[in-house]
Length: 496
Image (tube, rainbow, N blue to C red):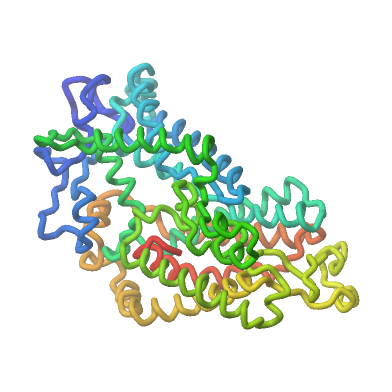
């Protein structure tokens, strides 16, 4: 490594900047002069996606330390906390989602505090293993990696629904170890799929992932120094104003006036009308005319609409209006499949007479269907809303495959044939090519090992998990079929 005026650098974990230096020096920015180590891409070579070109810098400072002690501490802590909190709040009627942006904001003062207080002593100095707990100012690359950790734990775990259903609905026992294995293997499988499909979902310029631009803008606001224009505000000032107002406002829908979550004015006008409740209730009906003034309600299921392109938001709105305000009411009032026997809006299962269906009566201790008991109980029925949304969901799967095949099939084929040629890669992917990439066979190994562990868990604990080995392979086949098309749709529209 090159020699500096401060100390000899033998380990990439040791920064060339002294502790206490201006942290703005550690941010690659197109607004200041670049050192020879910073790669600058010309404007005409920028991303073809306008939003990306305006948001993401086309620079990279390879001298910044990344795998630092504070990165591991804050990253692990962020991942653990967000995974717990999001899973805990998932069981609310309207789930409260704590995004990685919360951790992205919270770790800034913590990172700078660690940079100021932790010793910068170099351990094992003079050897190839030398390292320091404090390589210098808290920089943007550390911050990005911490946020990636937080993103990993920011969502709810789908496999936990298996454990919940078995315990809460079927009243059966499933041990902690089996639950742990199911959750871990299914989660890690996703990293395997992600690595295999990164050439299609990450490197092409068209795959721009709108939600990520929000985080990139925040990184720049927190790390870049920006001159305030006359009569305007800087990114940091705007962020602080919006953050303070948002925090102060949530006191009203969250604690003082919870009715702001859903204002169903039709129900207020006709409080005793069943029809008004079916049409206007935001909790038990179609929610026609209802509106919410609680941002956690607005963004609870589809995420923030501010991060989605206009065409995607309009498409979702049009589909929602058609399904909820046209198709569902028509099916209900024309009494399709005895629809009027059941509530118009419910996710429960019903008997032919409208009573709640006793699921435990038709399965044995091994979760197998008891046909004799099913004949006694009779067929089960769904509410109109539940049946229509399930039907639309299945239709959307096939529509996704056809859409991607028709509109992106050529690009997928060319990307496969190009085999990572420079001309097919995003500007920012090309900047990253100078770093050693994680080999694809690593992800293949992760995938195969976890599939094997999943099969072992299902076969060895078959008394608790009724999924046979071929069922695991079938599930993986379905996953590999839909990961690419759904990933492309999400990367372009911010909707999945």
